[in-house]
Image 1: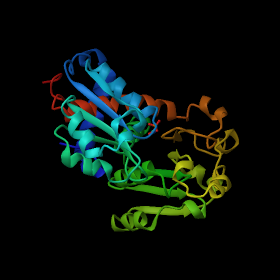
Image 2 (image 1 turned 90 degrees about the vertical axis):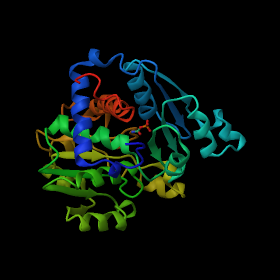
Image 3 (image 1 turned 90 degrees about the horizontal axis):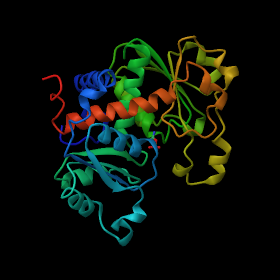
Length: 308
Ligand code: CP
């Protein structure tokens, strides 16, 4: 794999190998601590991030490699008008692999055309976020032990949520996965996504009320209503607190529910839920580092080094 732009660049087999490698890293971290010695990762973040940027950097450091980059466009020559293509060609002279986040949908595709080193999309606007999806998949696998035979509730901003779209694309490839789409009218899943689900014969239903369906779920994937994707502040204020998962709603859920959230959260999960063993979102954060370690090794062609 030269570049990773969308989760659909990966087959089920690719995903299984990455999950297997991440599990091996979790079990034997010392075996991996020198593999990337001499390799450099560039993290180019034109949009804010905590988890994605820092987990990429932690992943490379734990593999014995080095990191360089910037965390905002204002501190790069983009602020002087440099194109993304020129930035990528330049960084390819310094680094062995690039993780890039950009607010413009499609920017990673244009960047990949010019890149001389492997490029990973670390999120492009409301479009794709494949390494978050890999994080979600590793978390589902670790919490449930399988990708098939699951009922997954996706709750909140299903319209702009790039993590939701990518997770649906990944999970609809597995057998007997039922999606419950929980959103207010204004933030429902776009028609083009529902069309994709129909073409894949994926089972789904839509509702506005979390309370009505929470008892049916194996996984509840909460999302933030994203202020930065709204054109109109009034709409954001009206919709931002539509769903708040709290202890009362958790009492309606199964004992073995796993609650995921890509984070950051604002109000959509009450802090009181954090101590519930079913709250998997901070375990999910940790999984993000391990799956990115597996991805870096794979894309650098070093995944066979340990168990060869
Ligand atoms: N989940 C996620 O992408 O978080 P950050 O925006 O903090 O990277």
